[in-house]
Length: 94
Image 1 (cartoon, rainbow, N blue to C red):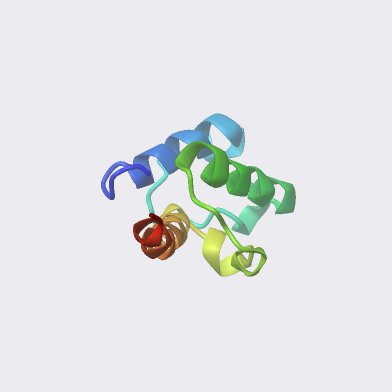
Image 2: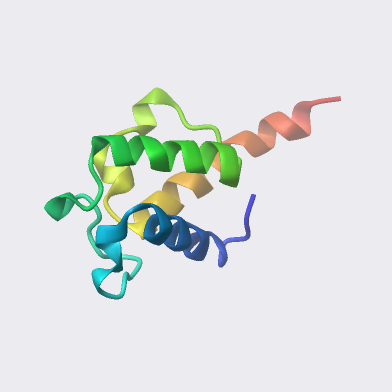
């Protein structure tokens, strides 16, 4: 997975590439993504796919809630949480 400092920037780059409406003004880590319709429910699924395929974190069904996708910071926290959850399983393997 990406380092802690790189993750928000990777997320920002993905969002700006994928959602043109977010390019209208500078996008901070705390700017709302779902308000105003820049990212809709299908967009959330695109973010989930990005996190799983490009960032390498496995999300659970119950992770797909509004609170986890409200901002870049919320998405980064979710990814870090799931990455941390996976670490013990990796350590336990022979």
